[in-house]
Each structure stands twice: as structure tokens, then as C-alpha cells.
Image (cartoon, rainbow, N blue to C red; front, side, top):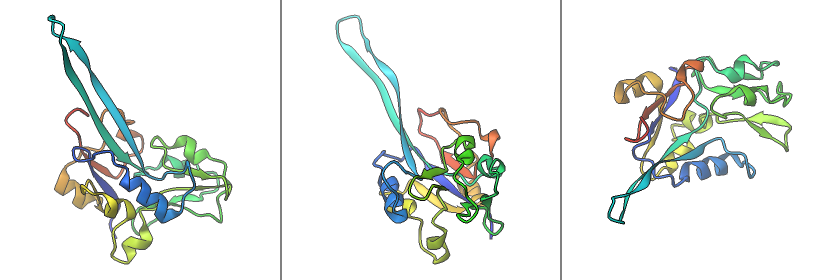
Length: 191
């Protein structure tokens, strides 16, 4: 199977967080543990036109993001027990709970805040692309919940052919750090 990845159409995202809630429900995550997050960005200002009136030049946009199942995952590279690893069959980065010691090195090294510490387990957890659902031919929780269809999961090469090569936007870490398996259609103010 080919390397899997995400397509995010940031130009369509409304910031509703349905993807966050669906992921949280699917994985039964406790409060504060979010495998998928939606960040809000604001830019612009109000300016005066010289006649006492104010002109609105304010914009906002959102970015839904999770683990990007990177080509060179910093989380796996810095895991002392190799609990955090990339699956050979599909490139999904997962945590072997039998090996994880909860040291949080993966969390500190990931530029995307992908790995999440689970206090109840004393171990790390993270997005696994809902591989259990994908293997049954179903959509991942985040993809299925998005009301504007701004998330798509599939083989990254197919997503790149279909949507382009953009994998970072203003406000994100440089893609050269980990080479994320992510394609983004940026919002017009995110460039």
C-alpha cells in the first residue's frame, strides 16, 4: 500500500471543529487531548478613512491539523524505545503501547504537536489516521465529519497529483524539518 496522507482545503474550512469532536469521540480522548486541532488566524486591522469612519480590513481563517505522518518523523527519530514508529505498509506513524515509557520526547520533538500524552495511561497517544476504519473501507472520523468536505485522506501521491504540492502555509513550521505527508489548498490570506 502507498504512503497515506492528508489533504486539507483551508480555503473551505469554517473552523467549526466537527473534525476535532469526531476524532475525540472516536478515540474516547479525555479533555485536553486532541489528536486533531483547528487553529484560528486573524490578520488586518480597522483603519480610519480621514473623515471619522472606520474601514474594516480584518480577515480570519482556520487550519485543521493533526499528525502529518511525515516522511522523516521527528517523533519517531527521537523515541528512545522505538515505540513511536512508521508502519512499512502505509507509512502511518503509530505508537507501540507495549514499548512506550511516556517520556514525552516525541511530543517535544514534533513541530506539529502530534503526539499527545495520556495521563491515565502514562503513555503517548496520537492520530493513527483511523487505520481501523480505513481498513474496512470507511472514512476516518475527521474526514467523515467535515461538513464542507475540507479533509481528504488517501495515498499522498494521488493527493499531490489532484491538489498540488503545497504542504506549509504562513504560521506553520518549515516542511523541510519532517517532510509532512500533507497537501494544503491555502486560504487566500494564508500565503
